Image (cartoon, rainbow, N blue to C red):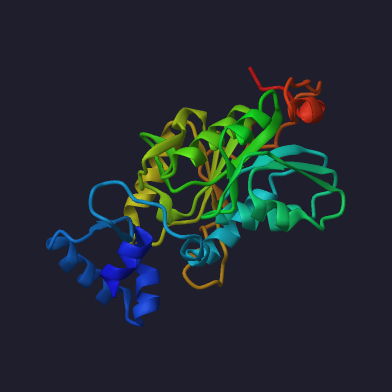
Length: 307
């Protein structure tokens, strides 16, 4: 059963394996070690992946069910970073979909996205404008990709990009397993003054084929507090912070499987007065004007990139 789940999904957490096979994580960990000894899978950061170093993308239903409590806490924290009247871009993914559900309460917001699920979550929100890219529908994650999506983003300038991915390492940054998705994510990054990555601990330390955001371009990481068995994820968090990434831990006290930070539901690993946090610093005043299909429409809504 364990091997079949890993083959079907590419990567599965020990917690999820224990839930499906209805046994303890201790038993699952022992079975995973045995399968690793036979070369059938690799253990990694509190879970198991296909052998060969890179994880592949799992199906959307599997991703949607994985680490749900952690994604909810991360999305709640990230929504608190968004200010009234702001213009942002939101990429595709299950965590960004959770974020979109919470952005519906931010008045005067403009959201540019290539995700049908993000757009759907905001479709009936009052005073939130949703702008979708063009492109070709990629059914596995309900996202628009390809040259049409990338061209529609030319000249766009917004305050922040909120992105997820398949893996995040301090050495390589954010990555995904699909080339077309990675290309659109890079276009979203180019449109933003700041980049906020939303990634639960199961993605920390995972490396996938196509880089989307190098570490030096990541402004802020919002993640959950890794459980004790995911010690490598904690090491990765420290390494990212050492490279200048602001790291915030989003907690959900009282929810199963989520360990709240020591000082409450939120804890920043870097200086809480970091000027990059919109709660501590005002964004630049004059609005820039873009030159492109979406830039012509939204350029006057977003602050220029900081120098």
